[in-house]
Amino acid sequence: MKEHRIEYLDSMRGLAAVSVVLSHFVLAYRLDLDFRILNYSPLHLIYDGFAAVTFFFVLSGYVLTLSMKNRDQIELTPFYLKRIFRILPAYFFVLFASILLYSFYSVKHTIPDSSPWINSFWNQPLDFKNFIGQIIFIVPENGFAELVFQNWSLFVEMQFSFLIPFLFIIYKKSNFFFFFVFNLILFFFFGVPVYIFHFSLGIILAMSQDYVLPIFTIIKEKYKIILILLTILLYTYRYTLPMYYYYIFREYSLVLSNENLIWILTGFGSFSLLLYSFTSKRLQNVLNLPFFKFIGRISYAIYLTHVIVLIFFVPYFIYYLNSFGIEDSFTVLSLSLIFLLFFTIVFSYFLTNLIEVPIAKFGSSLIKKYNFLRR
Image 1: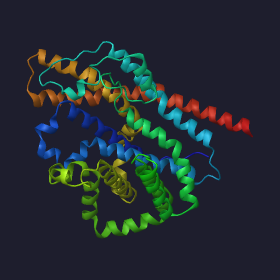
Image 2: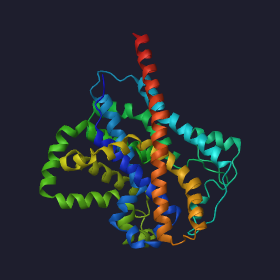
Image 3: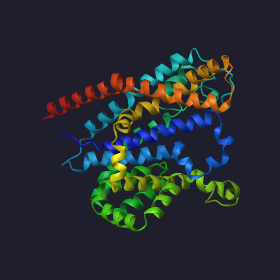
Image 4: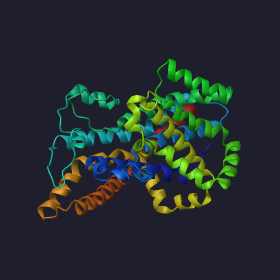
């Protein structure tokens, strides 16, 4: 059975990937310190990398559940193989490309200079043990280089890719209340990471959208502005409310100092954002524009490749600008951001079309053969 692809969701994933790129660029050149008012405003929505990752998780829960929802039975081996062929080949390629470039890497001091944060990832030694660990998403020990520092989220994706079929069955065989309590038990008593709530929100949305969406549509028609503001507030909660109380009063409150609270609220913001996209034809029409669909198709590659461009190539570009006497921060960083986005998109296009898609298709053909041989 061929799965129907909702292209505007791909576009949203693409925009979320771009916001991760922007967030890392901001941190790489500490623009968050230069523009504090902007950083702690709802405009942080544009470059809130943490929120974007949360959106990836909620969307994964939703899309993977849809792929199982209308099937008579869930075949775990094909499901897992499909996820492995989807996630790992492109990651391995970027990891090995990173170690190749790492062997030529040295910190290049420029005007403006890159931050100690971005320099720290590759400006350290790397032994065989810690490199092998990164192949299976293990964060290297302190003092060793981290080649693809966003791989922690891929580890989470892989973990919950294996859990989602079971979470789906539990929800299907029970009800919302039982599923909610089950999530709480896993989180509080078994130490399952907070991200379970994100994937579970995606599962809930996929399983209950037939009656949730009409209710949400009615609410949206009556309270549209309030709903938009609430969605933005929750989605970028980490940077909107902290300006007013979080970093000031958190030492006096166990609730406000709880990092998990931020992840959970951001998850609800992503959930609300998805609901809004499902009920807004105007937003869907924008997201279905060719450029956004293109960004959506290469979104995973964007997420993987941008760090290579940011760490290795951008400093050389800035050094080149400096050699021509161009040192004004606004000019240099504006041109550098364009450089980062352009070459990330170029590299992502080739990674998607030469590695990710062909190997995913190869994996699908193997899965079909596997299913045929089992019959």
